Image (cartoon, rainbow, N blue to C red; front, side, top):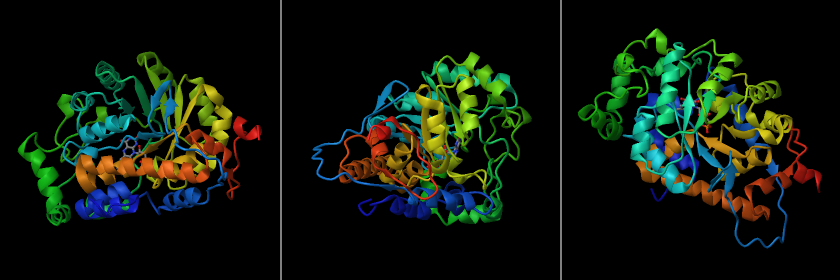
Length: 396
Ligand SMILES: Cc1cc2nc3c(=O)[nH]c(=O)nc-3n(C[C@H](O)[C@H](O)[C@H](O)COP(=O)(O)O)c2cc1C
């Protein structure tokens, strides 16, 4: 792993290790991948201006989110089937998060259940991401399990009312549930390290990997052709459901997938403690704006009572700081931990996080700033972005 010096190196190592279908499922966007291109442009266009001769000896990367201190302004985003990238991938990533002092959000569609992640990664700050099922009573029962496992922060994903159109998935034979096909079989055979290190390990121990949280009676292998109607994702999810979940869930709630001021204000009115300004990594709606373009107005509109997080497109520590500069308290990363896992299992994900930590620290040092939140002072007029009337900036 000595040559893994930046996120692109990790991505390239993952490309070699993973079957192509799985790599593309993680890496790519939807339809014509315009949102993905805009996402990259939007982060690239942001400039941060240094203050010189500020003589900060050490930076302080600690960040408080929802009243809890994290060692970095980073949270591991929920990613479906992370357990397919590495054997026990969700447990490994949770252990890395614990070691790095940041939270990890486990997806409804993880391979390993939240209970097993909690017992496999003692001390991890585990959040849970909810995709509401059509049978809401089953979602309610799932939330009871999640709370019993010690989770106190719930992330409700609100930007997936339908399956996104990802044509490359159809072409290369990837679907969830995974189907056997000649093409997919050849793809797997051409990646023997993944076949031996991940798939065979499951097959020889717990069997074909499944969606761990799905109710027992529906919980066939992910090779099953269809998931029963009751546990299909609810396409009719609405604000009334959020108020309902507010009654069920005693802990903190964040709504993920917000891209407009109107929806951010509705989330606040529905009682959410936080929001995630996110385009789902540009994997869902191909005409969606990049979060960087809408984040400042949203952060301004909701004010300090609602915790604002952001995600999508982070490839560098400086990208994390850019989102913070635009009004996010902390930033979720989705693809990067998966590249770390694929490149070197638990050690790879740990190395990747350490690399991001160093990049954040170096960028702050070069900017002459001490804390991530100070970046609001450094943000420079990038094209097409309006800035929040941040109190720090107003004081200048
Ligand atoms: C392979 C993959 C699976 C994902 N699965 C989920 C999921 O189950 N639930 C969810 O809310 N978001 C999911 N996301 C979106 C991430 O939580 C996050 O919003 C996104 O990855 C951020 O962009 P980034 O990957 O560029 O960091 C997934 C993303 C990827 C790459």
